[in-house]
Image 1 (tube, rainbow, N blue to C red):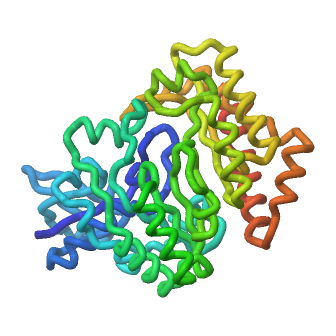
Image 2 (cartoon, one colour; image 1 turned 120 degrees about the vertical axis):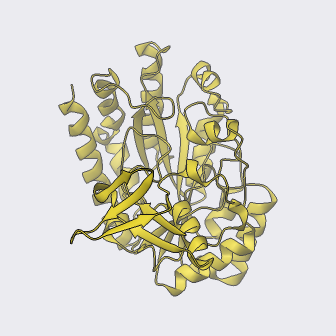
Length: 360
């Protein structure tokens, strides 16, 4: 069979508000499996040259030549038939993982870098704004790859010259899986060869163990300072625990990145200010190193362009005006990658701030 994987900025996104190019690792895993199974697989930027003719999927190339495909796969909802836990790791040569399109991802410290996924769905899986929750409700089975499978993938990435891996599982596995993985990374010395990052909930863990295993960047979904909102969106955390947990990450040597949401329909402006204040406090104390804010929206929706959130979001970034914010930024510099990452982050924040202000 012939399979077409057209690439776009929504391939690897759980929310559609901020479309961006992110290496679509789960699609790449499926493409690799199909190719290994002997199918013909096309991977690339083909969306503008695809059309449908009497139920057929037709790809027209630059010279006008047409190829008929049996199936187009471009999002995670089309992957339910595949057993995620048994999928191979991506062929990163075939899927062009070093392409500049993917390398522009703003949270990489070292280049070349790439994404991985050890789980197709978040182990928590109840946040109302996340597509993982919707997929679980639709009956998709949660799969977690073996520790050895991920270790093999890391070895492959090292051999290909990658210097950093960000795991884009909804939330990185914890418990015995995490302990076994960290133990292997530390004992084998792989922690010295590649930098790791992942998505994480604000939960109590042995973050010193994770730092020792090679983890650095931790993308943590805080979302709101208000327990009422946390309960409504079913985030499953206690607001009072957020500050000590983020401090424990930072103290362990990790680089937490806090994510927040604006414009919940039930919140007052005073309640949102609580979240803005929390963001500023964590940044000024150095408990989180970077932050981002987005507008709350359910899966498959995009907030209205005139949303009040576009006026509020720039306020999350005002912590940069504080001397204590810059003190911790300078104090955390350990190598040249930290300097370039800081400069890149400052540019991205400035661009985001001006973009939101422009929409007022």
